[in-house]
Length: 250
Image (cartoon, rainbow, N blue to C red; front, side, top):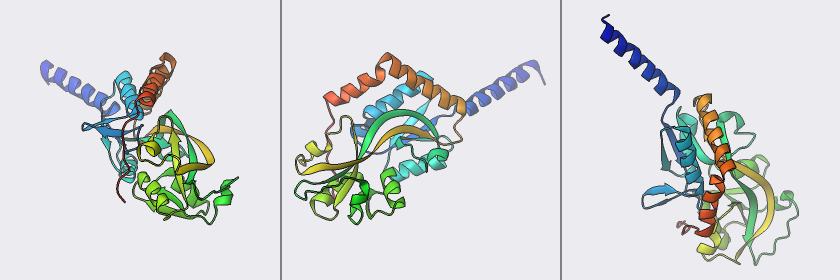
């Protein structure tokens, strides 16, 4: 093979190997303000900004698409270059993904109508009550596996509307910093916390085929963001100016 052709062949092989080691990540998320939502056709939110900063510091090319949760989650399970956020890390999911994070913390809370006057001391006290969840969510998996009566919706923001219409007794919500869903939809004082039943951490969850080296780079990038205060600055930005969001029609 002539020298120039050999050089080109070697360069092409190296380039192909580099691309194989560092694929473009196809990242998905759901509508879950203030962590992730669309404004002006762009996916934003404090969870989104953290993911974008992780990618920038890691030098990884990526795209982000906002989808219904089940489609977002399933995409990361099926695509070799797929990741999804904000994903609760549970025992059932542990071996399904490689994990970057945690990117945020939250609480799983049973919410009820203030006029119902529920007095729950433990989660078991809610047995027999209709608990609103949504398809594919970790809270649904958790409650269903323990024999609770769950009523699934297509979207989590449908549940407070169902609660106000007495179609469910309780709503299994995930409350995270900066969330203003109740206030923005006129439910303040009408829907109240009844019982916190778990404290959780959420992650960027990646398909097992994503190279370990990339996952390590992303975790190192997040650690650097925590050290230099970038992660907290992003959170404060959304604490101070929570995005406007309305619950979808049922």
